[in-house]
Length: 335
Ligand SMILES: Nc1ncnc2c1ncn2[C@@H]1O[C@H](COP(=O)(O)OP(=O)(O)OP(=O)(O)O)[C@@H](O)[C@H]1O
Ligand SMILES: [Mg+2]
Image (tube, rainbow, N blue to C red; front, side, top):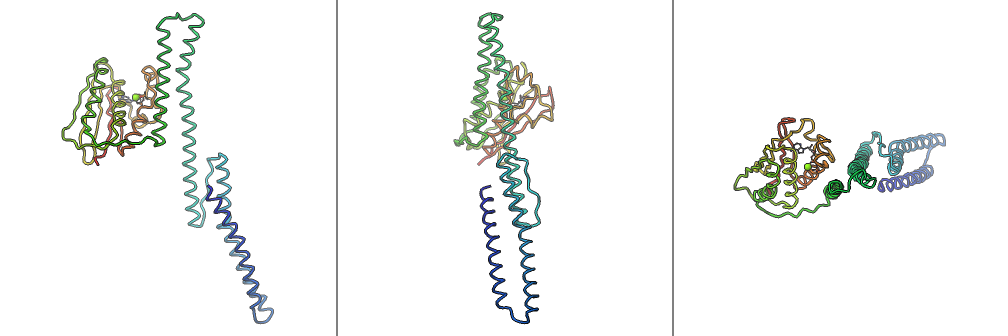
């Protein structure tokens, strides 16, 4: 924007300068004209008309578009992000206008995301806060007995708020790419096995079988172990959360050309086809009531997707639909 304003200032000076040069040339031409006075007048008028016309063309095709750009950039700076520039006949100016429009489109979508995030966060805070307030009021009015259950309700909601704040902090760091990757060359299969071992107790408690299918002889990967552990914990946590008792979850790791493919397949509730990509969006939950009951914030997969992409990998979901389980897969490149 600043450079556009300074360009405009330069062009304005150029404009003035070109007038001065032309007046000077006209004076020189006038002095050097020879011939009859009538012929001189005709020559001079022709010359003057040509100069005037070219100035008008310069003004229409260069000066005015740049003035328009300057005014548009001032309106955008004042918050009007819907502003767009028209197309121009000059190729260079048109390219500048298109680049300008792209920049404004990016600013507009960033602004929309910021506003949406504020709305989402407010919405997510509302439910636990209302629950805490209702329980507190019940206790104060002595409608609720001052028993451990009432206090546990409050503690559960406070824990949910703390988890949300922690997830938002992580999300803010991964979305702004402020999360440094502490890459280490390590045995990936061993990392996956250790995450599975750590979660096995929770699986046993719920009665969900957890099996692993780790191909031997995998090359060592250069990854951030903490961040990839977070991705695996997220996927395995979801698989457990959305698989009822007596179900099963299988984790498989295999090499596919220059990538290591990790799949977490569960026999759980499944995902409708039109929501397979949406579940990676911030705060997106397939079943709001079910997620509310289980305390999900709809942020886990958004963070996981950012972390996988930060490792130059891909992440996606597959499912044969509700009731038919789901497979969440991601790749990590082999260096
Ligand atoms: N394995 C799965 N089976 C079925 N649905 C799933 C599975 N994994 C994710 N989902 C759906 O995707 C949504 C988003 O998942 P995500 O992990 O981002 O959020 P969450 O589990 O609801 O909450 P949290 O942020 O606490 O993890 C979930 O609410 C759920 O509806
Ligand atoms: Mg989750």
